[in-house]
Length: 207
Image 1 (cartoon, one colour):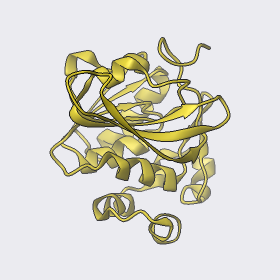
Image 2 (cartoon, one colour; image 1 turned 30 degrees about the horizontal axis):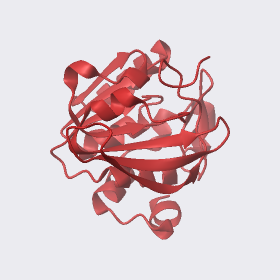
Image 3 (cartoon, helix red, strand yellow; image 1 turned 180 degrees about the vertical axis):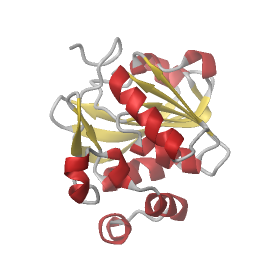
Image 4 (tube, one colour; image 1 turned 90 degrees about the vertical axis):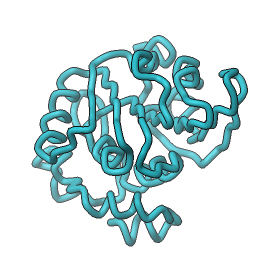
């Protein structure tokens, strides 16, 4: 998976590649789909949600530019697979999931894999996790109609927000870097097209 789908398509961060080689992706999918766990495709995980395509996980993670000391916020725990990758690469991970059953299942798998540097809570991810801000990096694993202001406000200066933004069927992946204490002072970089499930919440899509 890593050689043919990720390294071959231009992901170069060796820390990201090693994390993806280490983490058993099949543990994060339903037993009936285990034979597809390492395929170059997203897969359903229940509740209308998906585990992202391996290449997209790698691309988004590389864009966060993690070195190992960071405090990271993840919006959309989902299966917990992306969370596990982040736990390998950052010092602390805070993850917000809207659907309680998915959060509980992800917690169970992460505990079994001994990723104890992860905190998960159930709530509206578009509001972030204000009590734990600022964050060195934030990743959003659902498509947003616009960049949620609370997430930019919760970035540390120099922090990176990686988020898909666009319509409900296709989005553009952006890296947003906060440049100063003014949350309007950001650098936006487009990283390519993508397609994610909806980011539901006060600063996202409505149901």
